[in-house]
Each structure stands twice: as C-alpha cells, then as structure tokens.
View 1 (cartoon, rainbow, N blue to C red):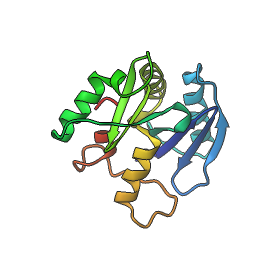
View 2: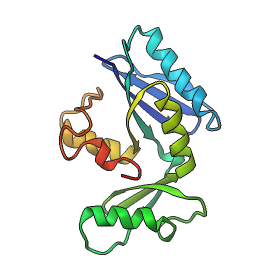
View 3: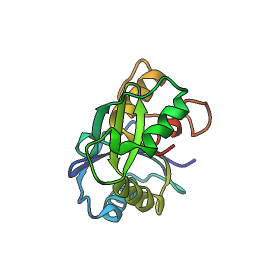
Length: 171
C-alpha cells in the first residue's frame, strides 16, 4: 500500500505530514516546483516510507490564495463553480488566469500557472489526489473527522461524492 502524504505549501515554507509522524518543514522556492517535489520525496525516503508511488494531497496556504466573497446567482453548485471558473476576473482583482474553487459564500483563487506547475512537478513522483485551498482542506477534514487529532487521512478519490476531488482546483 502506498503512503498518504499531505503537503502544505505556504510562502517559502512547505510542511510534509505523513501518517502519525510529526510534520517536517522545508523551505522552497516558488520558481522551483520540481525542487519542492524532490524535497518531499527525500523526506518520505528518509522515513523509510512509500513502497510504490505515494499518494499526495497538495494544500495551498494563504500566501498563494486570493479570497473573495462570491456573489453568484442561486443556481446548482456545479453551475456556480463553472461560473467562477469562466469569469474569475469578475471576482478576483488580478489579470492572471486563476485556478478557482468555491466554498460558499467564499471563493478562492490561485495563479493557474502555479497550480499547474505544482501538479505536474509532484505528479512526476507521486499520485496527486487533489490540489486544495487550505480553508477547503480544513473544512473537508473537519466534516470527515469531527474529532480532529492532527492526523490527516484520505478515504480515496471518488469513494464518496464529497471527496477532496470535488473541491479540487478547476473541478
């Protein structure tokens, strides 16, 4: 069975949580997504983990997020997510394309090029289950594990209709 790893990327820090072990902190350069992925791979190997490809949940912290209160029409959730994706410039004050996610009434955006770079870099070494905005990851975890003890778990993408994939960027 492959290891499950949560990687929080925030500013120049990344935190790596695997199983019940204490998180490991590393610095990273946003321009070097491949280096960040290699650093995480090194930590997993140091701990003697991951026989086979590890499963990773990437979480983007506040340093990389734009947050806005989204005023969208009362339509089904999928339509609201699609509206936000197609017209993110109406919600976020930026000229760069945004990867978006919605946690009503809040919308989160991150530079789409950064999200793509991270997903590709980590995807070269790991099975990336999702890339989540930190508030969405916390909300998902608290719904799934009301008695949070600091240990991350992941039931598997697609196992239930409300898995992290549903809240993943651009989904």
